[in-house]
View 1: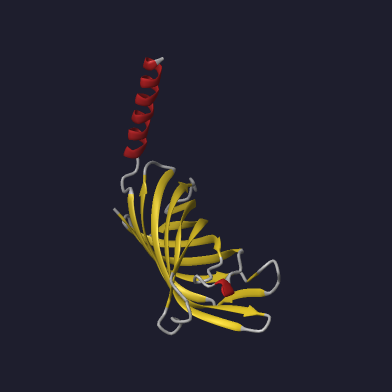
View 2: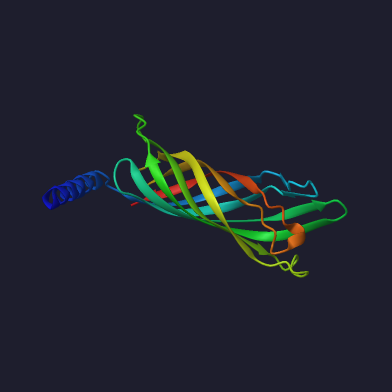
Length: 202
């Protein structure tokens, strides 16, 4: 039994090593400009709803491709927008910097077309909602929300080391309330994040 397990592990390691050897430039750094569009949310009671302004930002990342089809990617993103909360008799707005930290498993899809490398991804991370000086006070505080991320896109190789990336990412997370009960919607929301930018492979 132990010999079978050892043989299986050895075989997998040899296969992985051979597969990794096929990727000449496994590392990639990306810099992208993004648009961020969030879905509006309303509490089950109907007494509170929330929307946020559309915004632009940037996304930087590093990815490592283990073999022809699998890899990992880490990203940091930034934007600033305004979260608007509407109650039955009140309205509140919080301007915040949003920091996006995510890690994803990436599946590379054979395209059969020269210079084009499509992929899909799924992972998790955190969104940090950091109120600006304009919105601090009255109990408003920084808050971190866990997020699920999914998406896909394609890399277009212009040269051996450089190219263009177009991507769509979707993030699912709980609506932030900045630690205030009065802003607690208690709903999942969805953030659409299309982007385009450049990459460098090495």
